[in-house]
Image (cartoon, rainbow, N blue to C red; front, side):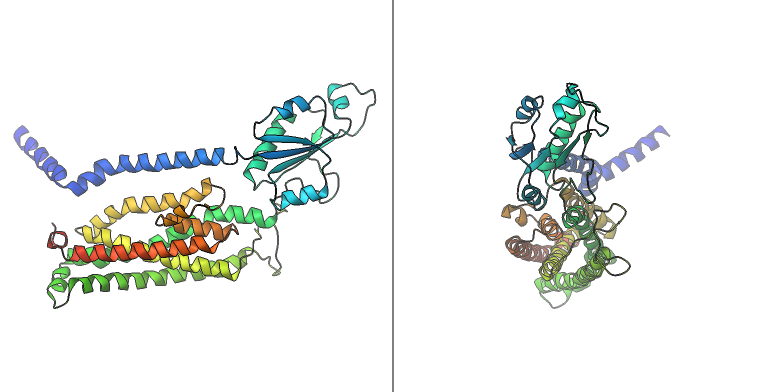
Length: 403
């Protein structure tokens, strides 16, 4: 009995360790993927934390208290403290994100009230006004530090209590807030939606042929195998493009609904109960979005076709595509850890991630056509390489008839 049990164990071990693909996907791939994904996420989170930390920020202070001057002047090495009145022009610059700044307006009797030197008792506590822009990482960071410093002084004064109707201390606009939120969410949703469409058709088109045995019939027909490969990838790309167009139409039709009230008028987000984010997109934004969606679907279909050709059957193709899916998911998550789209053109040479960056630029109103052109050109080149690789696979009987 023990001998039979040991025979079964050896047989299963031999089957498992003899299948290099199964060994890789079961033993090596999980740890490798976790290491890569967690390392990249850690790098992204660290970048998000440090983003803006080295930017020089100007703090313009009106009525600087003597007790706070030494603290503010040594609070941050990248902070430049300037004692001058805070004007409406300064506040407007902050709203337009023209400056990395925090504007602070102290009451004239701040020291007297806080330290207790004043003999007069006022029924109204003095109010400190701090103007900042929450969509600017540097400005937001200094605002939080300043709030912490003032918090150490106790409750003898108030901070950012509106003194008149409509007074705003956070100068981020409705449009910038909406753009910031959706530029971190929509790229991930779109790229995953596109990938799901490709996954629905590509594995069965090639690996399914191998599993059913019909690939042999195709290979012995009087046609060149590069013609077969080209026909496969063009047809798959065409069907996948329909999925991409459908995704684009859905996005184009849904965005106006997000920025309108029931009455059809535009509505902002300064009122927390509005529940609607106001941000407007131009024809150029929609054109760039359509082009990058189509290019992304092409390269996705090509990549999944390559993996499908390597697989023995549809199930194996699904297993092989899993790491690829996780990489695409990771690319979709990265915009959540950064402030806007990358300015480096090298970024737009990275497959899949370049599409994410362009989408981020579109939704954050930072569209520039040079990155779009670089993305489209690189994706066309990668698709051509994938077509060449698939042709080579169809020419290899070892790949086509692997068991």
